[in-house]
Length: 292
Image 1 (cartoon, rainbow, N blue to C red):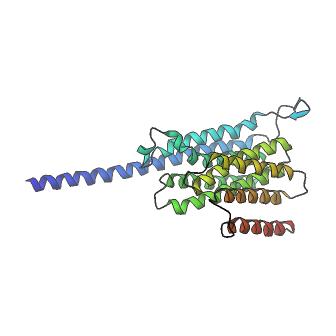
Image 2 (image 1 turned 90 degrees about the vertical axis):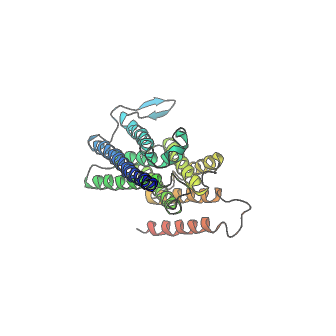
């Protein structure tokens, strides 16, 4: 009788385990699809919004400021994506470790929010043609991959971390390259471009350093990386470069800065191999693009 009770108890435990895991997976898939569908709807609505600001420019101390409601749309969508990330990450199996500390999820929210901001900004600047819809579809795929990857790295000790972390870093710099290239092509004013690059470079540096140091990176490293990148980008503003060349140089500089910031101890020839390889790759790509 006692053995049957133990056997029944084991069956109950197994059944509860089986019932819990599909429910968790179902909640994740459900919320993931809702977030992507919502972003896709708002992104598609940008197609009917005119590119040029409706309100005329305002002269403020000699600076012509063009204010438009359209310019606030990317920020609103970024905030919407940030809220969706918190909602999605609440389905993680290890959610008990951060249920009462939502601010610990900020590093995982940075990249999806940045991807949404960059996507919305690019879509508002692109010409309304079939290429626009291709850019929309590709951006949604990238956003979905980033959301899934961030969900996987919520457990730093998990087996997926060593594989997913480099993927997130690569996607972050790919987004930054696309963003800086679109900024150079838009020919917006220097001070606006410098501020935008400072913000996005800070976000990318923050997520990259956080991933490469397992959350031990200091804020000063992030600030220095973003500030130096924005200053160099501003200095290159009046150079006669193609938008792709400009984006390659700025993105390469940010990558080199973040790679140097995570080096512990004195600099050695072995530790600077990665920055040197990136610098050489940027030079080769810069030359190739110049003849394209």
